Amino acid sequence: MDGIVSSEQKWGSAAVNAGFSILPNHFISMNQFVQEDARITPTEMLVVLQIISSWWSKERLPFPSKATIAVRAGLSTRQVQRALTALEQKGYIERLTRYNRNQARASNQYDLSGLVAAVTKAAEENPGAFKRQAQSKAQVKDDDL
Image (cartoon, rainbow, N blue to C red; front, side, top):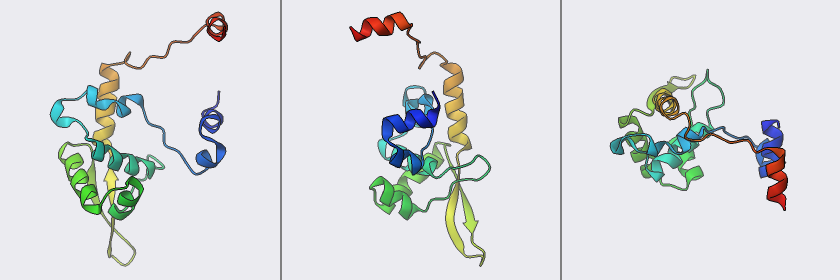
């Protein structure tokens, strides 16, 4: 089934029409695939999810402000700052300075190459971690009984 139609059936059209992000299972569960010192804390996960939700195309890096991330995640800007620093130290993100037309500082851009590399590595090293098993029609009918 088409992903958008299926998503609308699960979440409703109003939610889907507002936008959605596709997240690989290896990202959602990546703490099981990385060393303990590279694990993402719950606060860091909230922050990186907000960055990902602003990443609309591969060619353009996301650039939500710390204030926007804080409001959307229900965190303080200081918590966001600490999480960004930790994510950068772990190699998952890189903050890039951004300027507006008047050469004044704007919100940072976030390069997620490190995160993508970690998720890709986890997926390649653990290809069967999230395998779906298709049920036959007979099994589905039996399950309905």
